Image (cartoon, rainbow, N blue to C red; front, side):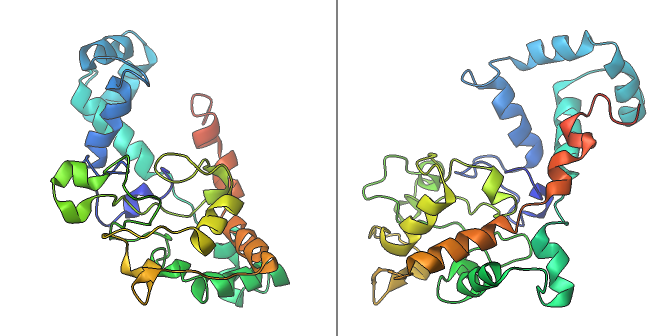
Length: 247
């Protein structure tokens, strides 16, 4: 997701990390034929035709000239402003999570303990500065970062996404194969597939890990993941209605 993108320490974007900067990343969906399907020249023409952008470009860059580089700079800075800091999890940190239900606290303990989720999502942003093969399949239909680096040891490795607002960002995994968080938890509990590049965090005695969570523990883990949702961010007019924001 785009939430807290500024805190991705690796600074690479897309599941296969093919974009080295956020400025590179924002122009790809615009040009992708499955998404917006515009050339950069067409983009510049469309933006230049909207009168209200002249004032905005002048304010940001000193004059009203529209270029694809300036568009990428503006979009990247906008994305960097999307920060999540007011989830139930954030609000509970100062009180040892006294605002959590017993089920949510159970899920938090599983996340940091038996579930080993924090091995890959252990920072305040619930992200990692390392890429992983998480055992989705063998062989991989999508080589992931291996397609970029051309290295055998990178096959099936993908960027580790932030879990902030994860309840709102399905479907899950690089190919969207899981529709719900319950499916994701079930996968990590009992369905991780062996692969030469499988992350060490997902191995036990050199075999794919099996968490053996009970159904109640799985529900608790999902309940905890829901505490990472920031309702203020999702309703902030800066993002939900930016053209009317500040009027």
